[in-house]
Amino acid sequence: MGHCYHHALSSVRKWGGVPEDYQPLHQWFDEPSKLITADFRHRALRHHAEGIFMLERFFGPAITISTGRRVPVRLIGEQHVREDLGFIPGFADWVRCIRPEPWMGRAQPIHRDVDPFACGIQPIPVEGGDHESSGNA
Image (cartoon, rainbow, N blue to C red; front, top):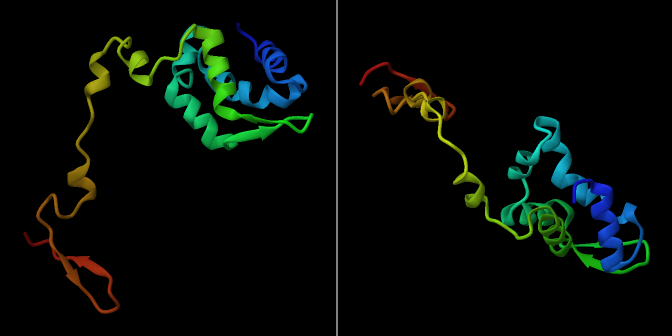
């Protein structure tokens, strides 16, 4: 498909109402990621089974459209992803397609900087329940 409005028209055909009933949900799938990359790769952010469940958490289990009908949000999300991809992948399907680069695995160990127990400093109880570092191992 491509544009959120066209997804919304498809939703109207399926469940009734007007495009404005559905546009916020379809925009949720596309807008943040299209700001980052304006090609098909933007879909990796939310076009998967986990993204559909996130949509449901964000909008609730169902929306009430202008006709008064309640439409399950999960079905609207499934419709969007199927129209764009032909099926509903999992997030792992997208991740498997990422070519690892050296910079992706260069996590810096911060535990020694933020965890006093990691560098052998034992906290000393002080009056009032707070702790101070003794500097002793």
